[in-house]
Image 1 (cartoon, rainbow, N blue to C red):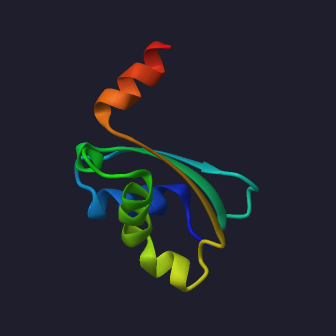
Image 2 (cartoon, rainbow, N blue to C red; image 1 turned 135 degrees about the vertical axis):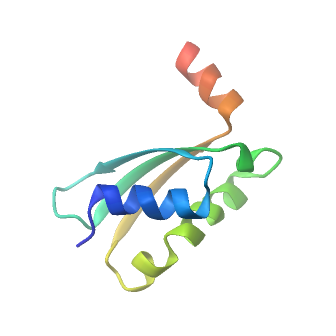
Length: 85
């Protein structure tokens, strides 16, 4: 089991400028949805963006501390556009 705070810290370690929202989908500490906003996503495709997030969480995913992970990624500009709509 891994806490939402630990998930957030791991993502921020890999993507230092990231704004991160973590939601525990089941309450069991192993199924998460994360929303990550980072300027490091600029110019990258969706798969590349998700790979950056998975890379930051590699240890937790490989040891199955995180069993399921839903990822939403945005550049700061895309996040502002989403928030405005």
